[in-house]
Image 1 (tube, rainbow, N blue to C red):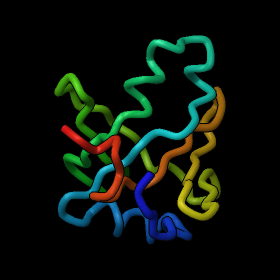
Image 2: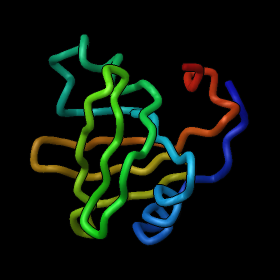
Image 3: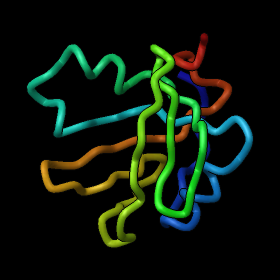
Image 4: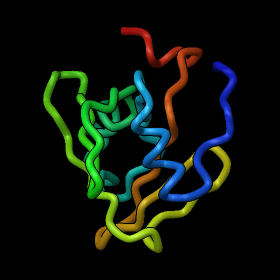
Length: 107
């Protein structure tokens, strides 16, 4: 696995990181997909950030479709090392920023 830099420590830092050219995320855990293991492969893939807005961001999935994630409230987010997580009504979704050294980032 490639070396990782520390992840964002706040929602403001996350927004800045996602706005950087070439930014991408990789899914770590997703409680909402616990009963759908076939979707976890897509979730754990490297997904480039397509657009960042003040209220959320779009990623591009491996099939080319765009996926939307709202930022919501800062209180819904936790930051632990390189992993950042958002609490949603159905569970928690966790990500990390992708880096060029990530083997999973190969196209």
